[in-house]
Length: 634
Image (cartoon, helix red, strand yellow):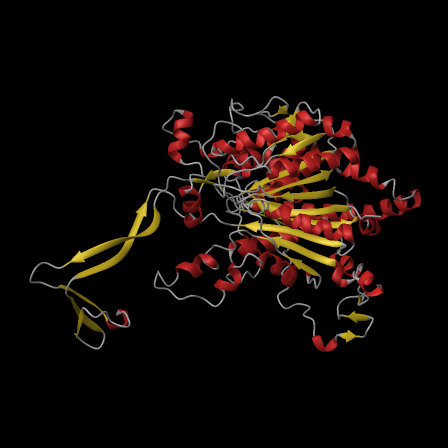
């Protein structure tokens, strides 16, 4: 039997809030929630944003004034709304109204005169340029005389035309939640997301680790740009040009493998498979595909699938902006025929738009094979039947779309029809669109859905687009889509694209249901997570709901096995609720095992049959199956 990869936990953070227990999803559909869910969402966000503190059952504002949970929306509601989702870039990233840079300036001496200035001796360049004449004034200062031209770079500030991004909720700072040791923001977010995902399972992690052979646990994660903040590549690339010193950490911590490495080294303590692949905007799905394939093949039984990108920096934004890929102020003003820009509505998938909006995020999903999930009493959030990846073939422009996404979407729909039936695909499936918010994307992506809907006789195919709310987080973007899909499965509210007034006239919407408001929907069986990455990195995942997943597994397991599972699930749900309450109150207790539980290699026990590691109950079998036996038998 082929193992079914089951989702048993998901955590993370983006502009909408925390991923676990659908907090970010509920922020997006806030106006459609009942009073209890709405109050719960405001409380969780208020504590996440450090607007409210919880201690010994009491809630206080940051100034120490007591506050009742029922009063949070009234007193802090607008602040919470303003500090989440896409909004004007905040100054903790950089000042978009006065973005710092350097400008060249040339000095030329007048005829018969030289350029003269006084400086500290220690500030002289080494070696001194040949046309500089240096005269010592005292032990600390010198006078410099230059014949010819002197070229310098001086500080300058410009009004950045791109002013909005999907940022973590205002006031959320992962660096203060653990001993972050000057780590880049993306890796801080990784520690938060991994902890959130693990605790969301309701399972004791050491029990999970001891339930399988140590090499049957895998971590699959990546960034695209790597860590581009000052503590990573951002600082590495410009330190010398700014006259500063390169640190010993910037190169290593900048690598796009670091989210994988941090999860293994500081959170899970895994010694199993480690995997990192980047596929532009489809990176999360690329890593999910590897995990799904390994679970199906039996190589992995527990998979941590993750992706992170914190690239709200002047350099990354200028790079995308110069490609005309980002929505800028001029373009938005033209669209709205207004002199005022609404920063909340910069991302407009499938509407009249002028570019995407960058975002920051970290998403982590925990998957298991179905047998282990039932054995441990894991809460089943859904399952991933498969992930398809295809390229576009020959291109003129490397960033232009192509036919690869037709292949991935068609295969995903075909697989779903075979497993769930054509009726489920037609009436109980929906699309989590890439929906980048560019004029080209709205046409080409909708054309794919239109063609496939025609082929499979689908009408009114529901489409949601998370980037309208959280921006384009690049590597974890399809993780944002998966998080929204799980929210729809759980709450049966389909997020509309509320940032557009109407679907653009050139969108192929004949067979699609794209709405501008949130609305209740019937229970969904299938979500198609679709991603179209730069360079031809196309991927689509077929994801089943928890109810449909259980319906499938009921054919594999008998009543006695289900009874045992249900009994263990009770304890899991209790643990989940305990974490949910703690997290909603701002108590995250991040897992950061810096040097805790290091393996002494001298204590390894190695035989020809197995390898036993200290700290792990089960040994690693060394009976590796020879895949080339047919060659030896001939």
